[in-house]
Image (cartoon, rainbow, N blue to C red; front, side, top):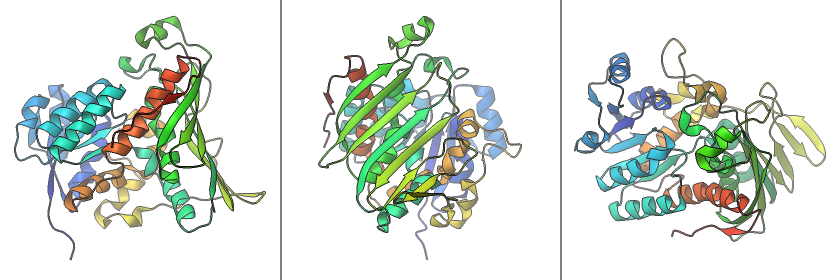
Length: 369
């Protein structure tokens, strides 16, 4: 018989966040206890649709509810650090969508808040729970890759039409989708980075954050390792179908992401390449949430958040993320990623942009442990 303890979850932010409501509702160790959004009409619409009684317009009031064990934050990126710190200080476990924060100092403050509270913190990074990542991790763990020799990540996405706070965002400030699978496979952290900006965006975009570049490309040295990795990121005015990818080059085999979403990835054995059908990994999950690896969950009419439809459903990662967060609390263990790993994955991008603004100067990443 499994563990029957259940965790009361509150979701804050109901755009992308609503994708997780039915997952928690169907998880055997979770109670979808409360939702929070400032828009009263939308809050009630979603609360009625999913039959959730506890509804909060105020994040501060939500944190005063002693029945809430854990908070899953899905608000705009400039609120992530402030809300994560407040929730940890209120004695709540915290899951937060990416990125962890917008500055290195904010990452440090979250680490300190987690250490002081003893509660779990997990950045909900989709890229390390996609079926593609789980497939390559299986190749690695079974020895089929051999020694990893090099890693490459890419995330190119046109953000026109997204909320205004995205406009002009430095590309590497939102790079965790490209960085995290590389570091997770290397089982280490980024140590230092050299990054170059390329091209330029329109002046009205540049003035928002002071970042002129259309594309940023970084080379990272991986800590305590003979490995390096390359990461490329673009957000605006760069022609490319959406791609959120990673390539891994091994001694015995290599994995390369497909050029088009309609294609399959390639595995190379020696010089011979073959397209592969990546399996689903729903069997790793409780049966009650397995279906959410292959279907959107916003509502029965297919009304899904843009990040879900544009990103191809994030590779079936959502139920894996929710399950990892819940079980880290139930089993009283560190989640993957924990607060230190989340900080390194986030600071890798922040430090890369800092390097780009200094014409490629080496920038060391902070060490938080």
